[in-house]
Figure 1 (cartoon, rainbow, N blue to C red):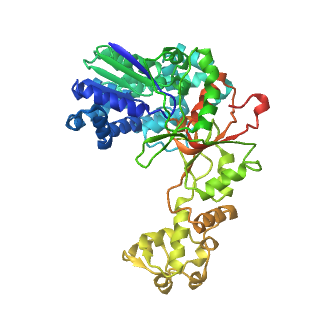
Figure 2: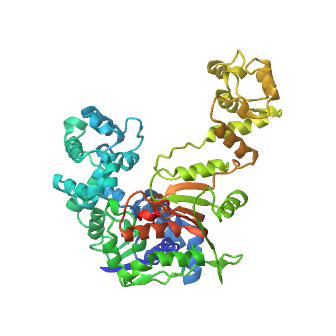
Figure 3: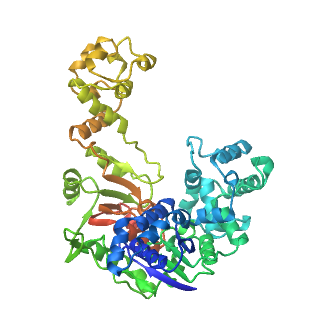
Length: 559
């Protein structure tokens, strides 16, 4: 087996390179002999889409003067199975019946067995297992411990003792309760009398562990693993087993972007393994010169520690056909003291309000209240990425109702469904005596004017004179009412929000025109860990990077 390591700094086209490797291999091997793996369903779906993209196939054919279109299209069915996550592949190879997979109703059963499972999550309604494992403090702890050291009581204690104070607070439960829940959880999965199925119930990590212990190595010829720096201990063990009989094992990743140590990734080992890779991708297609150079400064000490360096070229301007012109994009870097009164703050506000560019406001941890407060005061729509529970809910429905009311009061007919939503938001004194939700349900579907609802006493006549919908809505803060009005008056609700908020781990793999990074951290971390986190955050930028100085900088609490 020949292992080929592919190192690519941010935005150097690792996915495109791996797609081309697949095109190379499909000419020599059957599609069923080629396995492509990534860490999330979204990433696997993206790779599959790129493999099947006719434009990508055409570019490859033109460059290499070969015909592969029909071979790739004929492989479409195999790609549904052979472009996968490691967990799904192991599940399929184990032939695990769907009924034996741990599901959300099993969590309900666990709460019935011991309410301790619900001690800190009584207000959260978990709909899917993925959300449960990501957000529930016990399942987060247990899965991180398994990925890092193991699942025995000794391993759990070892992992818990390795955590700093803030990390222990994240997991909420004390060690003795975590061990108790672990025993209850494992007893439940292994006892048919508790889960009422034949055999045992398996979670995601169980499937990978069982695959490594039970299943023979497959007779595939090519294994391609993307984002290999994020693989946990058990995932790396599975990769080794899957690749045993391969002719080629392509392992793509970037140790400088290894930021999932808490879930079992091993940056130190990956830095050493990828110090001298077989293939290095050099041309960047994302970061402009200024951002590229700043990112290189961030990561340089790690390159020195591990005695390697990378050639990583900044993005170039493209011509009308999408080809590089050789002219390097300059880019912009601004430093901000805060989001209240900084010399460069006006540049950020102008870009936010005037341009159509995308923005990410990103942070290491916490709830990003400073971002939310700033965007709220500027009257700008926002969306939230990932599973973090932010202390603000974007009033999407209320904004839509405000816009519909503007049409309604100006004489337009709108749908009954839209009127129902609008009237639910209106204060009781402006509703007529005929209005009840039951009475609204009796009305015939269709489009009606405001005059119809006033005439039939669903609305008070005074509503026709209202110019600002927020004046007649149910009580809310003045700031919220003004926020909604500002968004609608400036037509900022007519497209999907282009301003996002998300923590650094959530935005890895994404790119935005502009990045706004809050450099505060809430806990002390290893210096190289902070460098990798900052490197990942800053390297999302395609045009401008705004760096907010940490208010805790004197204490070392800064990226």
